[in-house]
Amino acid sequence: MAGMALIILATVAAYAPVFHAGFIWNDPDYVTAPTLQSWSGLWRIWTQLGATEQYYPFLHSAFWVEHRIWGDSPLGYHLLNVALHAASAVLLLVLLRRLAVPGAWLAAFVFALHPVCVESVAWVSEEKNTLSTVFYLAAAIAYLRFIDLRRRDRYALAALLFVLAVLSKTVTATLPAALLVLAWWRTGRLSWRRDAVPLLPWFAFGAVAGLFSGWVERHYIGAEGSAFDLGGLQRLLLASRAVWFYAGKLVWPADLIFFYPRWTISSDSLAAYGYLIGVLALLAGLVALARRNRAPLAGALFFAGTLFPTLGFFNVYAFVFSYVADHWQYLACLGVIVPLCAGFAWATRSLPRPAQLGAAAALLAVLAGLTWRQAGMYNDMETFYRTTIAKNPGAWMAYNNLGTYLDEHKLPGAMDQYKAALRIRPDYIPAQFNLGVALLDSGRFEEAVGHLRKAAGTRHRDNVHLYLGEALADLHRYAEAASEYSLHTQLEPDNGAAWLGLGNALASQGTLREAAAALATAARLMPQNPEPVFGLGDALAQLGRYPEAAAAYRRGLALAPDRAEARNNLGNVLILSGQVGAAVTEFREALRRRPGDPAIQKSLQWALELQTQGGVPQP
Image: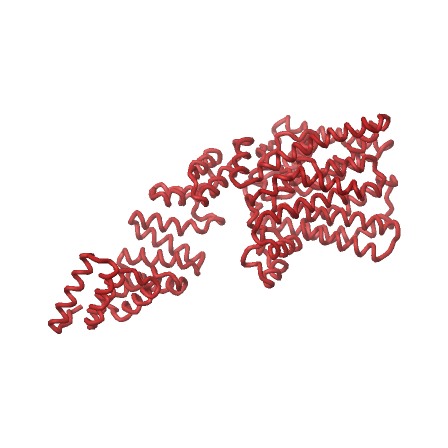
């Protein structure tokens, strides 16, 4: 128990920087959204595709519970992620000791402290890794107990843990295959009845979950299109290169980056075949070695098999910006860490115990230091993106995301980041859209229109028509503005701002009946906003519908009583409706709220003259 406590303490110490960290990138998509925080929201997490970013219902149920405990405070989520990672390291130790694997303690510590794991532990969204791995390892331990005892309750517990792992992240669907590899490593052969049959339901469930997850990735997250146009040979070349990349980062964890450069995979490049030849040669060597020692081949099979879903044979949305990511090997890295630590224990078995412990301690100290330093980049959004850009100047998405962060916090330099993203990738629609909006906010309307038009019609940027309408209206191009606002109302019929913009654009063209209808819709959709009812009053007044116009102005003034201009307009339509006395009252109130206004003074003088004369002007 003391050793396990030491693993936990070492993990907490190495990850200390994340306890001051905030949320990054897509963390808000995982921390339970306001629309899902109720009990009905919990039901939607399980039953509605698209309610959460990915269909991992147990994971998002865990986030739902967490939000009830610590709300939107990042600290609670970071504490839990570190705790889950430490728990996985302890479970790994339990599993390896049960299997009598040499170097079990060292492997557990290396997994706990290796900097490759930082991305999974410091990034709140990757609780899907830390949580699913706890269930994965617990399921493996429970299954080994079932193998020894052949008791149904042991099997049921193992199966339940496996299901929870898959419902947290589907990469854990590889567990039954890993258990077969483990059985082969232990005995040197596989028995259909003893080893395969109990795992058949697990294979079936895992296959269905994996295929479903791939379908969601394509149809709900967007993992399709030209960025994924790779042929079969290209995907094989990509997979072989990725395997070497991941193994290299485990052995020599230098230059770890959140966004790695996206490789160009060409079947015409002879160099690309070197990775594939290397994989095949290594596999052949491990097969030959397996006659004397099956462990290296078993580790390699686990490593490659667990990585398989993200090696390029299936579309993953992140392939848009990189084919590799540290968090994709969080579970798979055990296939390298465990054999290497076992090899270390074997190679140093003849050394004195102090020397053996000293060498292990030195290795762990280096890993802990690297993890502590790597964890610092997750302190806040700006640090995170600037660190990424410093290490990978071609990370166009990082430039765009940094610009979005600067925009949201009213910090300078946002447009420079969007422009940097577009210099690297001119066809990157989010950066075109964000730059267009930033230019609009800066009053550079003509430039804004150019960038927003490049983003128009794209699936993920429906708001582009709303902003285009605003920019065109500011340029007094009201017919074009009305067209853009109208497109937005078709895409989002309940968007009051689009109806308001449409109504104002139509009114500016003199299309008053249509303008009044659009403004009435906007007023219904935005009952607390006075702008649409004031605009409706103006349109109705121009149409000669004075009583209706007066009613609209009064509705608006109930929401914004200080609007002197609207009171002046109300007074004018009251006069035209024959209510001169009421008009005088409104003019005086308007003048009280805006003393000395010449237009209001003139209106009041006119109304007083009419009141004195007892006449009513003709409309």
